[in-house]
Length: 206
Image 1 (cartoon, helix red, strand yellow):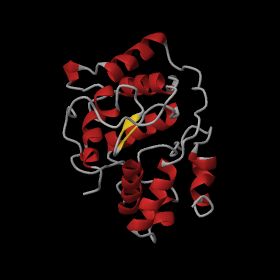
Image 2 (tube, helix red, strand yellow):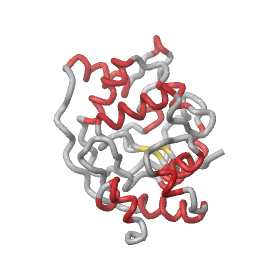
Image 3 (tube, helix red, strand yellow):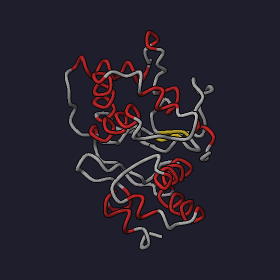
Image 4 (tube, helix red, strand yellow):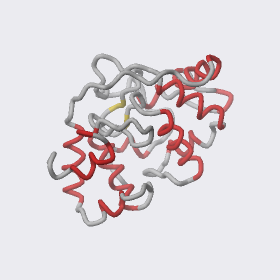
C-alpha cells in the first residue's frame, strides 16, 4: 500500500506525517473511520481540495477503506509544536473554548467531542493536536461558509457558525501550540455522550 499511495504522500508528507507549509494535514494515525469518511466526502463534493476529487473519483469503497486503514495503522512520532502565535489573551480564550466551551453561545467544549487529550476518539472523531494553525483556521472557516460539509447532522458546521473570527483564531492558535501526549492514539470511547447530535459519531457516511 505504501507504494500505491505515493500520490497521497506527495501532499501529505512522507507516510502521511503532514508537511511544513501549514495547510496539508497529517493523516497518519487518525481513526480509520474518520479517514474513510473524509475520502467519501471528497468524492461526493462535501469537501473540496485541488486534486482530491480527481484522485478518488475512480476508486471503489473497498479501496477507500483499505487506504484509510493503512494510514490509520501508522504509529509515527509527532514533531514538536510550532511556536505559539497570537497574544496571551487570545490563547487563553482559545484554551477556554477547548476545555470549557462558551455557555453564553451554547458552545460545547472541544474536549467533549474530541477527547480529553484532544487526540480523537474511535471510531471516527479526529484529534485536533499536531495540526498547523492555518489548516485549523481554514477548516473552521470552511464549515462557517459551507465549503466543507460532513455527514448529517453536521455538528461541526453547527459549532463553527457560532464562533466569531476572533474565536476561530484563538482556538487554532492554542491548539497548534500544544504538544501531544506520549501516547497520541485516539481514545477508545468518550466518558459521556456527545453534547450534540453528530453524524461523525455513526462511524460511517450517510
